[in-house]
Image 1 (spheres, rainbow, N blue to C red):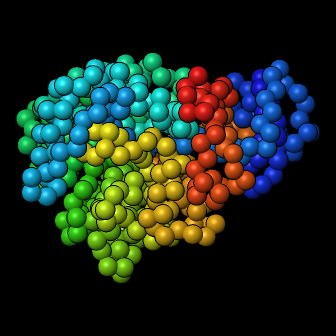
Image 2: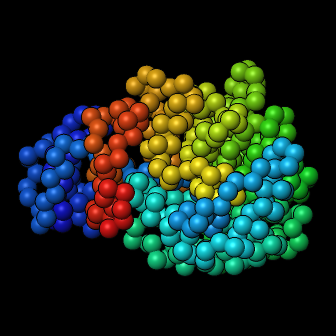
Length: 396
Ligand SMILES: [Zn+2]
């Protein structure tokens, strides 16, 4: 029955076990030494075994990772999404082919332990469906290594970029899994008009939603309230995400608590990558209210910022560091954001280290999860469906 037997696997609760895998799924978890040998035995030597990391927000089409270095150009008068989009268009015109750059980034993420990913891909009047067509092909090539969800992302706005509403429909028909959005208030200057299109596409095609929202303070909060109202009205709880939601980090504690309760009751999840010097959502407060908080690398070596290493374990450390997480429970929460909560937000089937789940896991040289979050051990092996896909950072 068992194709592979992984012996001496340390689970998060400290127990030493043998894990049986058959047809890509975990079929047995038994105390170490008690499982009958399978066709192939891999001795994990007491390594910590955790579920594959969930890279919940990345941009496979716009990174220059692996390409030549492109110096960051600051905005002329403070951060401006329009100006950054213009810089990006200029940079992309002189970059290596998109498929090559996307592969570089995928190898980086898989090497670090991600087994599932959600990538936004530009779909708008400026690039049409070209980027999506390229990334769909790359996804096909990587099917055995990582599960990838693609979001049709209107980087140049929806109402201000002619043809974009129709392109979003076409993107879903072509193979995108979700519909995205971008700062409905500050970019398109029409929250209702923008959300009409986004939720309209979602309703017509039965797809989930993931909206970029950089807007600060009151405008950010107002937009989140509108997204929550529509999510509830359409019965889309658990199927809508707001990425960044910086505005939640600008609120006084009582207002943040009220917002968190609304977000939790609406079933909207929040993605944060604990970015640079920005205010960012109060992770502990949101989780305490019952909000699903997940994470992603977002931009890696692109026109938005030069940082990023595709390591979700390092991202958990950064979230914990910036959130002031010190206790074991808090460090475990940071880890939950890049694993179980990410799987919830992406609605992944068969996730986790349990019988019946898909055998997507990472082995770490750490005693337990809190230590892994602070130490970010480099020595790891990555398994997808029970097959080794990366070791020591390199895809095999
Ligand atoms: Zn993004």
